[in-house]
Length: 237
Ligand SMILES: Nc1nc2c(ncn2[C@@H]2O[C@H](COP(=O)(O)OP(=O)(O)OP(=O)(O)O)[C@@H](O)[C@H]2O)c(=O)[nH]1
Ligand SMILES: [Mg+2]
Image 1: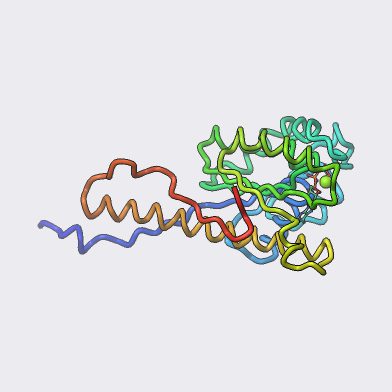
Image 2 (image 1 turned 90 degrees about the vertical axis):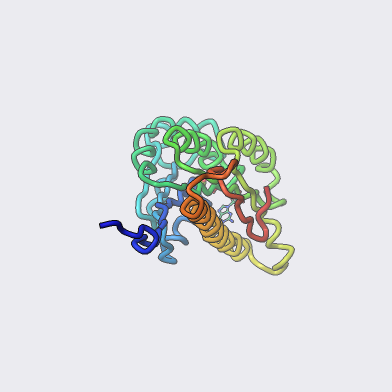
């Protein structure tokens, strides 16, 4: 008996497996906020700072690298951050594999996140995991970190072209009387919104493509490219 395939079609459910990977102090704070908000993502926190990592709430915590930093962070040295991540490459790879999309979050201008981010991005690239990096630019009064942030960003973009930056300073324009920690929390919140909106945009783009293939039986030229991402207020390329 012939069946009408149209009537028997089940709705297509697309649920990408998403990981938010927080690197260094800022990244781990953001990962904790995702975890505590019960966001539907896996949270992976990576840090050279043992105490900060112990205070981080996440599905998985990866401590890098006792042999190099003795658990005390890199003290702003991105070369050390990179080296620590490379020593733990296998462990990091095991944690990210199995996800479709990774959002990497890093505070720019320190050593751990800034140095480790390109290593994590390369791991995602070679495993064909779609990756977005969100780099948080330091406050204007953190003078010593500005150059390190700029140089770090160039290295991160080379490994992950879909890198966006968000300015800690922007929040001070909107909330001039905010304390530093209040401002950082507001920035962290906008990262949560960005991840949510980007994910919705990707899923609807992919679903649109599948629907079009179902209707016409063919793929249009240019389809299959990554859909445009939405950029939340305050986040710029
Ligand atoms: N928005 C936001 N920014 C933060 C937060 N924590 C730190 N930052 C910013 O991120 C920059 C980098 O700092 P960290 O993330 O602590 O640096 P790190 O990667 O741990 O590097 P080292 O401690 O030097 O090994 C700082 O200069 C701050 O401007 C946070 O929770 N939220
Ligand atoms: Mg640190």
